[in-house]
Length: 609
Image (cartoon, rainbow, N blue to C red; front, side, top):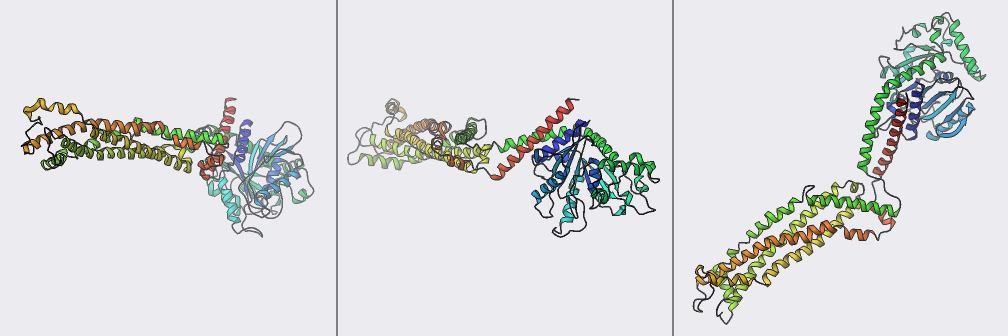
């Protein structure tokens, strides 16, 4: 079972090393989930003397006013033999065998964090003491509660200390060691007052009564120690600390413990309670109770750690990898992010993601509807046919068939198809731009780097603009080609269909009558409809080839070419991650390291049983 206390000690040290002091609500905290014993008491309650009695050494700073200004996590390790020594976590390779030097280092380390002012800090100091005269135990010594601020302290110091103490003892995993002096009315005890607020039923509070030997003659603390004055779930424990004269004379702690035992054994008032009185009994009882609490909390702790590791890993994955430091690493990172974006863009086009179907809608609905709206039959009205045929004849009427008139009618009609063809190119361009922006927003890595996101978006849109111009040129050429060279075979078939009015051969005397012109218009309309049906199939092919296919093949080719010319400084500017995100990733990484380490340590203990 001693291994369990060592386990919690190890995790507590890791918490402090990796910045988990249980006060940052923005990050999951392991510190608050660990069972601990917090030592609470008012100034001059004898709190420091109780701790020194348990340890058996003088090692705590003393003086007037608030001496303890930072939480002191005191980890006691029982060794079989050898010389006693102490270690601070902030000085990992230094052993202190002189406990006067330990006292000085506690004061110095407090000043390093708070300055030489009278301010307090919630960042704990970790002190481990190895001795054959201690039990395995961890205690957190908190600043003494006070009622007034002294010179050099802000007026808020009273509330600041109270809030710090409360933040420790209000946690359900905290065991409260409430120190109260016997020579003062228990109703005025600072420790009992604040303990009652967070633990009204006394289920996790141990009451310790100090200065029993200093009570007025004719009075005693029997009612308190027997739980009659103020009942707690656990029995009260009385201790007799060294007097100030003993401290000044440097009375040995071992001798002080012996005198304490003799005091209770020989006292007529407390003799019947002697077996559960004294600092030695206090240390053993706390150690045993802490072991039981830790054992009961292990399953819940394992579950909490596993759940939190998953949450931390998920958030780190969402935040993405940290930025590389060298130019090659930065370039590779940018290329990988761009490839992720490009893959998402292709998935939209190929149907794995939504959006690509809108392009088909342009070809299947928008383009045919636009062609239908052209209303070629109105363009080939009788008046327009007569006008164009007459103009094409000029001063010399046509002899057999109005070929120039046919050409003018066909060309003037086909040119109107340029509008729907150009509109199809623009419609697909708009869809591709929307898919680029959608893919940008779906590329998680780009959310980390605002500048890179803007640059990639701009480069992709520029590429689409160039592709649109090429597509427009190629698509309009399809329309122009139909105007520049007519399908002769279509007209050669017309004389073979004379009974249906298809023969263009007529006398020059009736070449401009309505029937003749009507046949010309009908022939031109049939030819234009044939061409329109052909273009309805070829325009989508041109658009897909010049825009969609090229976007899939080379959307970021130009950007990649320019990227290779950039210097390290320019690459760094593209990876200008939000400082808040960088800090968050670092903090999450440290916290994940803590939880994984704790998981491994707990597993080693539980599997090793």
